[in-house]
Length: 234
Image (cartoon, rainbow, N blue to C red; front, side, top):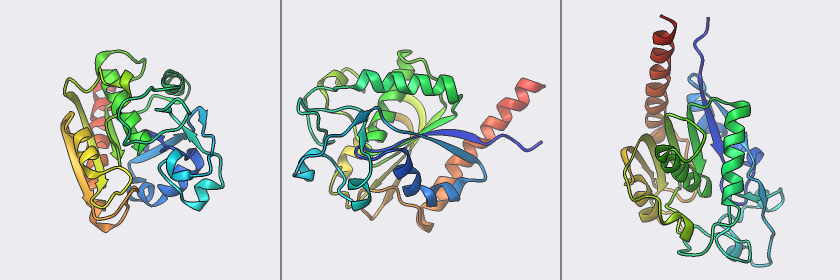
């Protein structure tokens, strides 16, 4: 019987949705498809567009402007979000937590999480919440691209303890939306973080320089899963 692949829950960025994120991660998935499969979900909160897109969100690519856009929470009372904001609320965050728990219950179990931008920020928070026993989910690793620590006031109580979970922390040297220092700070919260720095901006790269890092990380957790399953059946 063919060994079971890793099952990874994919969490998109602000002003994206499941289908957009799936398209944007096609090359990444091909690099690791021998060992992993991905399940994509859409955030519960519809983003209301404003005239000045730079004020409302993080990404202004045409395909995302023309598609349904969603977010995991808003950090200003006008229901907008920017990753670099400090302070402010986390409007809708609890609903997003509930969606993740329901997704695990209905479509899980999941071995790991993949997040981009606000989604990577969300993944970091889920790692913290899991360690504290505050969410009804269980996963073994996380991949975060262009992530950052949330500056929302309700989230400042997190990040005060190192998180004992292996993560792959990916970010761009030239990211003009989430400065690399913010992504570095997120990685520093984890005891076991593998860092992949690329020369580009705000995206999940999938070129030959990153391939080895991705495959080694995924294969390691794939092999661990096979070992656990062998122990359970022996």
